[in-house]
Image: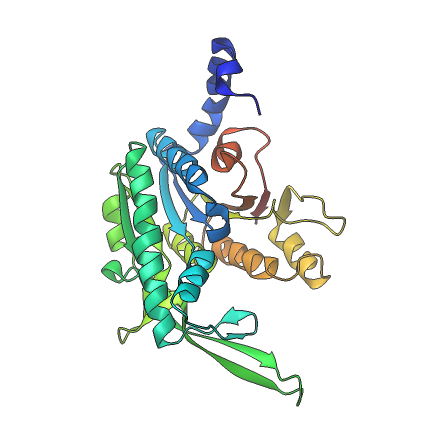
Length: 298
């Protein structure tokens, strides 16, 4: 990509002018952006992302950021000598682990991102689902087939939750008032227990409750790929279900696409899975004709 200094003032003006219809489309709309642990990358990448979020707010878009933190949690657990158990591909979150998860997600990652956005001229507010009873969760359960007995059994994942109810009282006090909510995917049960929630699922629940114009899932892959590993630019829910059924969509992409379908059913207008490591991925998706990633819609 050409450096900004090599682009003539006329070309810079033309780029801004061509972005106008896209800015008008999203004027005063809410965009929920899930910023994945792998997509966060290094400090420069995170600061560039923060600048893009501030730009969205400056163009009268209401961004809400939900961040992950899987790699950072794994690093901290290793540093503290806490060995994680896994079942059905998911980390079992015991009492010792949930303390570290909360410290990393609601503490270091959340406040670092808040700092970057504020440094770029925004007004970020760091929260998690526990604040204002924003996200109520229930204990998540998974099943797996025992390799010896071939019997399906329920796996206890510990303090892992799934969103059950979203209360918008707190978010409605922030959105539209030049404040940018930065949300860590932690929630509480009705009896006050803290649960770790998958960041994609958390973002989907929040976006659905907000009836967001767009939900952007920033990850570390270009989007949904076909069987020849080429990017699929656009999918309907019906198409997405077919690709899951025939095995084209597989592995970790299945829960992402299922989150997209859930969000659309809750009233989100469109969901995009895109590569968060691409420079200015959010701006490319929202403000250019070609976009980036895979758009899933009804």
